[in-house]
Length: 299
Length: 305
Image (cartoon, rainbow over all chains, first blue to last red):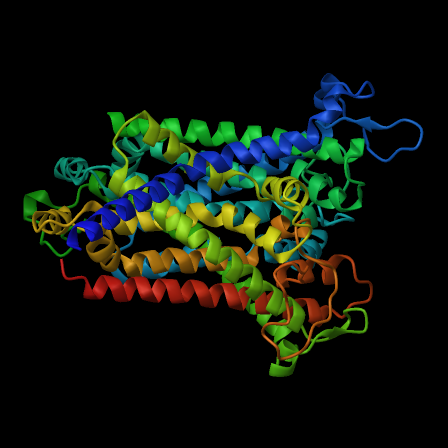
């Protein structure tokens, strides 16, 4: 009796272990599945004679529904994504890293706890709510402040994206600063350095890889953001020449147009191809961030 | 990092112009950083205050529990609210077990080798995939390939895969916080690896796991893009007051897509309505997050080791 029970429990244990291992590798399976299924829907267009990959990447003409001459050039959309992300990073990097330094080095006790909670809540605000804020709050503010006809532009989306990616930067940046041994700070302090000198001369050089990773993860978040930029950029397919120009990003294009395409039409397939392009960009950014962080740990 | 501010300087070590300059730059640096943080915190407070001011008047129990009427220009948000609960609930049932077990694998079973590194890299990348790409994946894999059609099930599966890294990360942290001696003591009395995990490691890290699950709930509730093409519908009437008015193979409304629709697609919708929907969504997410924060601080207070 006891013998059979122990066999059962041995097999039970084996089965559970197998299940755990399966779940463990599920992340790899999912990443491959995402690539496979998105590519599977988009791939047929690559074989079509009306489509050239060179034009797809280098032409600014995006006329997916044109009756006479359908053109799928994503350069203007890519420019939209890059300009919005770029301006967002110009705002987010100093503020995000500044906040990380403030929270990690200048604050103690209660103030620090409260600030961390506020930043966590900032991270929790859904992107659709950010988009709504862009549309209803930021739009009139930008119109009145800069006397421009349309407030839905690169600047609007960039401010929203900055506020969305700052929490990522603060939490990763703070971890990076915390990872610098206290002996570094004590050594500098003993030499008579002020807190600012310690930050500038000791902590920033020591934590620079971690801070770079924080910035890269913020970039990844900004590139992939969809709903906020869909609502705040103003839907104009063009290469923006100033921060007050409207534009359109890769993500917003998929979100705006996928609902209106027929399944397996060329337009539909091109949207999936844009998905692959986005997947590749964020994959590379995340990969670099990971290697940068790993580089720190090896030292 | 406390500097003795109250130490009396001995006469010959009194203030020189150099130390004064140092202290001045220190003060300036501190002020600049404080202003930077204020620039982040103040907009948050102002925006939330504005949403509350504009949307508060519409919110009532009736608003939450009646269907939208008059082409979504009047009435409540019942079908959207319940849809969000369904999406969150179903995706939680999928992602919580898989995510927790994946974290158990990474923390308890995985050896420190290249394969584990690849798994970790995959988790990081899964978290980094743009939400709209998850939407394309959900459409291609679940709606079309698996013939689920646009349904709560397909949308929830998409959301589950998207938010799984949140659970994996926080569970891994919770498991790693359980001291190794607990496991060793358990192995020494003859328990197997799984018995140790089930009886010792998981119960001791349950609060941390719970926090991760709650954060996943908050993330899922706010997502828009992944459900737009996999299960969300523009308008749907359901039975009021019945929590099981949806079926898992139905399409549903959701708060996030409802807000998008009312703001951008419904013409002549009253401003206050969209503010009220945004406020309900924001309130839900903030409430859920504050719960997670409270659980975490409570856990920190009662930790015995």
